[in-house]
Length: 174
Ligand code: FES
Image (cartoon, rainbow, N blue to C red):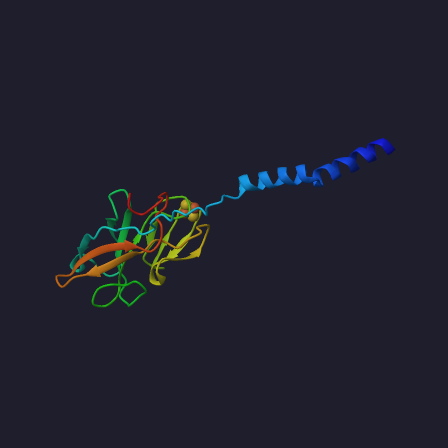
């Protein structure tokens, strides 16, 4: 036992000697680069298409109209809610658009005209269309993507962006 303790002690001393310190310094030199690396920052900006989705004359109060944005694989809905709401466009600020793919697991959403919500049959998430697609119940970890809408002088409705990431996408424009 005594011999073993001595060997351990000798090993410590050897490590702390010049050879040991030099070895530790060499190891550190391989870890810390002498020239600071420049971080590559990818561009995060997404360019959205401006897409005509319909005309204000196509909309009836509280009746959903099916659309797709930003491409044909992304179903959505236009709604005229009859009162000014967050994100609302048009002369009365009451026209809104949303993705109809649930941000939780991608189930298709159904509109409830009574509650003015988009509801998920998968795990029962509920999104409030009068509150910018805010999730008011359920499993989703984000609100429903809402369209950025513009209405021109002829009443044509254009979608020009989204405020959340569409389900299943790495960016909203493929
Ligand atoms: Fe909609 Fe799960 S897929 S709540």
